[in-house]
Image 1 (cartoon, rainbow, N blue to C red):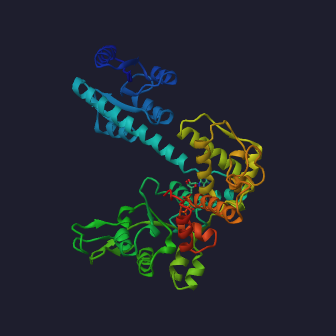
Image 2 (cartoon, helix red, strand yellow; image 1 turned 90 degrees about the vertical axis):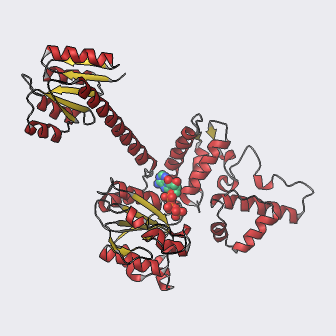
Length: 456
Ligand SMILES: Nc1ncnc2c1ncn2[C@@H]1O[C@H](COP(=O)(O)OP(=O)(O)OP(=O)(O)O)[C@@H](O)[C@H]1O
């Protein structure tokens, strides 16, 4: 039941509003002065306030000012018998939701209350969602490089400078991009994300800049591109190192002139977009190889961020592991779990080629697969546990018997090794092949011959 605080010095009004509100299923609270209303607000949490303006003692506008300070999300509807435009404007500036003139009309009061409650609920929902989003994108870690990174983010975020984030796969580049956005002055405007590596070369331009009707077969209507969608806000260009030179030239022009044309059109469109770009490539080497424009690199590199690999900030591993453990236990509705000290040491000593993403994936798997409350080295993959497994033999030798030949043992090992490496690299063939330094085609052949089923 929604509670409504009625503040009016006229008893007849308080009583008639009390009756109406009760009839409509609300719980009314009554105050006959501003002082009494403020005292009540220290004990009760009404969902809405109906507040008279003219009252002896503290008047309605002053009560409204104090409510704005102490209860900024509370919806207040002002009531007045001698309302002037001037007081209505003053009340609106102080945050009043509505202004109703006396004598009160029953319909108007109820309509205003319904609208006020609806807007109040939406505002609250929005606040909770934003809070949850901020928590989901929190950068965990207190190691020196991460503390320094967070400091740089807080300095660079409020400026309008373009940003280049570099770092290996899975280090948290997207997280850094989102943190910059969240702390920027554009955080109420859109954050639009584009993974340049995931879009075929021939579609990237229309994806980024949009297209006019008839620009190509299938373009039956004009379509806005990501730059349009991000206008006023931030565009996150992930894997910028995979973008063609032609697209790079167009992006450079936006940086310099804030202008572009849609595919198949001559109309020049002006935008105000902050670009945050990220790459796992060495762009200086790409420039050398003629794959990346030097001028774009220098324009982007004004605000450079480098996210170090996890193996260079091992101090963060215990905190990250615990964070992911709590996150997945709550997501999967499991009883809380903990890692014993030996398991934490093993996780901290491992090299994490897939960085934080790999750690997150492994913890997710442990939460799902391990029924025990305490996770030990016995539960960790062999490559991470090293020689610390006590309870069972390493999975790599589990299928080997007295009769096993050298050839079969080697195959057993190879299969186990590939399974683990594929898992570490999110079942991405190219990345796995690169990590273990074999040809992609060779890896494909082995996967086929071992009958390994690809997960993704
Ligand atoms: N410091 C951190 N705190 C909490 N979570 C993190 C942290 N770093 C990374 N993660 C998580 O690890 C995963 C990978 O991070 P993210 O996608 O930001 O990496 P990336 O460098 O952009 O990877 P890629 O280059 O492969 O796109 C995400 O789920 C992210 O939430």
